[in-house]
Image (cartoon, rainbow, N blue to C red; front, side, top):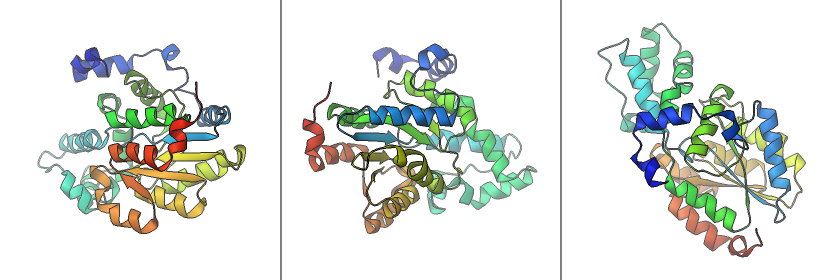
Amino acid sequence: MSERAQRLTREARSQIIRELPDAELEGYYFPTAEAATQAAIEIALQNPNRISAWFDIDDTSLNSEPWLRARLNQRILSVLTDFAPVTLTELLAHGGRYFQVPRYQQAASEMGLTFGALWQEVSLDAEAHASMLPFPQARELQQTFSEGGAAIAGYPTARPQDIIRLTAASLKHHHLAKAPVIDTQASSADPSHAKLAFFRERVLPYLPEDHQLYLVDDHASTAIAIKEALNGRVEVLVPIVARNRDRIDQLRHAGVTYGTLNELVAFIRQKYPKLNTASHE
């Protein structure tokens, strides 16, 4: 990140991201999930080394969890003034998923909402999304792939299409790799089925069988489902972050590669030396 970007206040950064014109989002933003998917496949096909990397957004590319939980707590407090904000510790005690926290469910009911409706408000909150910062190590991992000759093909995400443009603007502003942001039409409660279907039905049939895909995604269930179903055609790398650190034993048992983002950078360099010597522009 540039020194100027570091000096920006949250408010100024948010305003810049929200006001980025469409002309500056070329390569990141596409008006439909279908168009974004096709663009990502074309990026992968154009790579002579037949290697592509795909990056999740939330808690993989962008540090999302603190902002989403804070916004959810604030929304509830605007109605239920005696609500005690849910902490990270409480969230982890319920599997790291907002939908599984009983106090969130109860609060939504007291507000006269389903939790799904409450969560939709938060998941589309422009201010929260524009406030998020990237993980610097995510940029380093992207660079490690790119320098080794792999294409950064796309960002498959559980974020709905209504927030995709803002997501693209955030990635652009923070200098993350240019690639299509793709709504996989996933349930925020459990995106694993949609991510699996995305690769199995919408991506792999259009790539050569010897094309190796890497997905970087913090969601343990997604990683395990893809590991079990796709016979190694998509290798999932799971960055360990606050929200999934209680799933390490499950990842280890399933044989899924995991570690901090720094450890994943080292893993790629050591485990796949061909990536670091492959020809590239």
